[in-house]
Amino acid sequence: MNTPTRVRFAPSPTGYLHVGGARTALFNWLFARHNQGAFILRIEDTDKSREREKAVQIIYDGLRWLGLDWDEGAGKGGQHGPYFQSERNDIYERYLSLLKQKGMVYEDDGAIRFRSARKPVVVDDLVCGRIEFDRSMDPDLTIRRPDGSWIFHFANVVDDIEMKISHVIRGEDHLTNTAKHVELYSALEIQPPKFAHIPLILNQDGSKMSKRDAGASLAGYIKQGYAPEAVRNYLCLLGWSPKDNREKIGIEEVIALFDLTKINRRNASFDLNKCFWLNGQYILQMSLTRFRELSQPFIEAAGIVVSDESYLLNVLGIVKEKIKLFRDVPDWISYFFTDSFVTESEAVEKTLKSSAALDRLAQLRAKFAGENEWTPEGLELSLKTIAAKLGCKTGELVHPARVAVSGRSVGPSLYHMLAIMGKERVLRRFDLAIQSFNGNDGRS
RNA sequence: GACCCUAUCGUCCAGUGGCCUAGGACACUCCCCUUUCACGGGAGUAACACGGGUUCGAAUCCCGUUAGGGUCGCCA
Image (cartoon, rainbow, N blue to C red; front, side, top):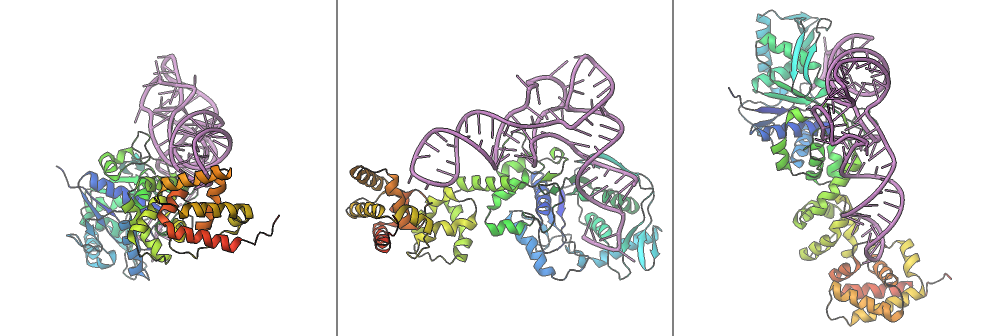
């Protein structure tokens, strides 16, 4: 008998999405997709949070950003709703009366507690293996507070039953809680789902990753301009691997290969460096269209005015290989769009502010002015011709030219940069540089 | 403290009794490529926590110790 695969991600709306939570969601999603099952989003807001709407939105945004679409649940609907625990009171009441009938609960100062069977509980965890819990010493579980609100463990179990969850995939911090949950299932005489407890994500120093730690919040990656596919790829590799030493691996292939039993049992620590590197790899191999798409919010936020889309695409095309984070895009391209760019004084001092350099720049300007074909190859040839004529190294022309047109010492390939900027703009900037720094050669 | 999980380079993974004088990737160092910065190529540093078993043979199996993490809430 094949019960359909149904898994859920059940975050509590705390106002941010932790990378550990994102990875739990990802593993659930991968498992659902691998088995053609359903991935459900349930919001565990039994503890009436203050800014629920906003907090829930952050969860939606994070999951969507990672491309983890849910088939059923909050913000989507489905056959097993409502998907907010705060709206499921009647259901919990129903299950409570069931337990009452069986005499398995009792009142304690207004709260309702579940009487433990006090017998050992065995859990066959898909990741951790067979685990035996000695329940003899544990206190009884509270399931409802005096004010009528519900405790997580109870609501969680009831919801998993009602939503017909087949596999509970969650963080290892719930491993010992599972014994309590299993007791609840037994009391309700319902076969528990399969459990898979995935290891936690820790900081580099081994401490538990908490809200304020660098890299802990998914929102941080969005803000810094990571490519979602890169972060998702990195998260896949935290506790799981394709077993063949590959690092960059497409999501379709991960779905095909994904298997709970291959998940590592060891806690992982988050390597921001590697995530950063992988992001660079993704950008390097990304299409220009995708690159442009992911750059957009940052270009917009920086107030760069783009009137010519094809010019922008050309510019992005030559800086793409330099970019590691989309956040850095504006800085790499701003001077392509305005003549009033910031000049690095150090670069000017070093390569431009000497009469010799300005002379060379003037020679180059004269040569470029007569340029018929304004192409990278043509410009390179001309520049080298001038270098030969003046008897200087190409670098002695390249560097002043770069600083003259961009204000900085680092940038994309000079010839391509000049070609894209266009003759008019380049000659103008050469002139501007010669004017403003000529006669300012106060140094020896 | 009790209970549970875990233990391979600094980090992420590979390794499931002999192919391991332990492999890949990130980071780091050096070299090459190069107009800058990157990319790319090459080389290098670096690990089976410890102690007992089992076995002809152990990173791989068992036990213990130690260490780390988790749970013991009327938080989720």
